Length: 202
Ligand SMILES: [Zn+2]
Image (cartoon, rainbow, N blue to C red):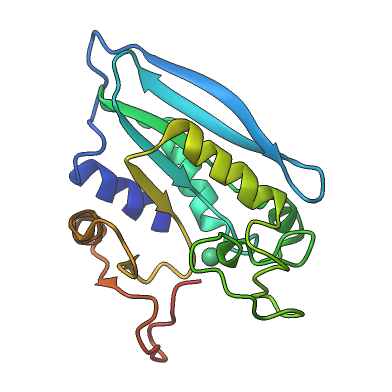
């Protein structure tokens, strides 16, 4: 249900159209964008029509114990793409964690806390360890390289529990609110004080 909601949000937000235009043949390509700490391939699906200029990257999961986003990405792989959309789909940037049902990668690092922006060394020995250094993990570096290569206009990363659309440090609050409205989920900051009913995004 979570996946269906997010896809519906994308449709209503104008990211998708119900059908591909007659002139808009969609190309599809499978790309290996890196290798995990445990030696697994990081795979992306690239879907685009000639002339597409609006690059969007969706990462289904970076925490291996949050599989719902991978189902969203799987659905997006078969959803019609708007002619202007150049779509990159990464089902998971943490295939080792996904295989083990574990939040971290094979080095015990929380990939969501390993990116260099706002990196803080913290949590060693826990499931939220930021790693020994910014971008210390091959999965992080692979996604950074992909970002530099495709320069997406929009990046969407899915987490569980999906209580809403995180506005914390979001560059486009317009997008946040459109997605939230279409998904009938609140727009909120994951840094807001948690309540028993609404746990923070992970
Ligand atoms: Zn997460």
